[in-house]
Length: 119
Image (cartoon, rainbow, N blue to C red; front, side):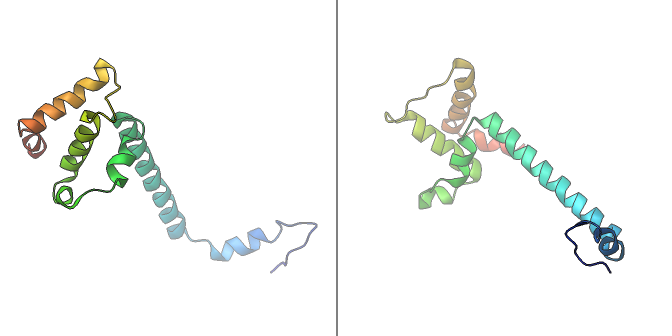
């Protein structure tokens, strides 16, 4: 086996790789990279759909005890509605962006939102 030499630093790579390479490991690494890519693109798409920074607020904001017992959707809706309806942070959206939020808020108040997710 060749040792490292400053004149040819990559000369020992083929001698090392040949006995250590396995197709099973190569395939597993390629599958893992593909799965990570799918997760990344899905999270990016969800973040774009919800609005910039909303996903971080939904997933990583501290919640009170009674909100922890609700489902994830209930928590998200309660958090968005309470923040936007308070005088500290008014809703600053276009009509096109505010319409889905208001539809969801109406469904929460009419207690129809859970039924939409169960269907």
